[in-house]
Image (tube, rainbow, N blue to C red; front, side, top):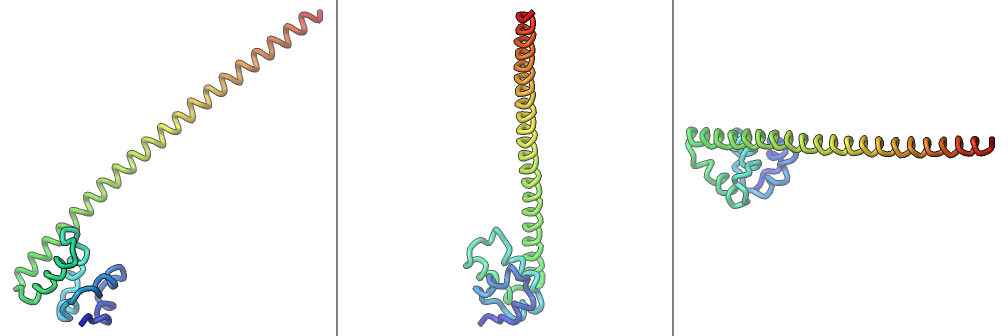
Length: 136
């Protein structure tokens, strides 16, 4: 039976609904909620069955094994965060590059437009000058 009250107390909001799908020892929810959170968040434990297997194994594990599991899952989380930051920076760089190219393109278009306007204005001045000379 899932202890909903304990889940509400010990787990962050975003994991509470997910945790209700598992059978988790009340003792581990109470004393080692951090490892429960790590298992729930783990990307390498991608199926519900894998996560449930770890929840089932926790009561059978000694402290050293629990500590090793915590270490492995913590390192996984840290590595994934590093990768996410790296790719977030790369995405920013790409976006900035294209924004800069777009701005350069916009700048080039404005220059072309100004030159065309200047040419049109010069031609109009020449026509007006020719008209004045013809009237003399």
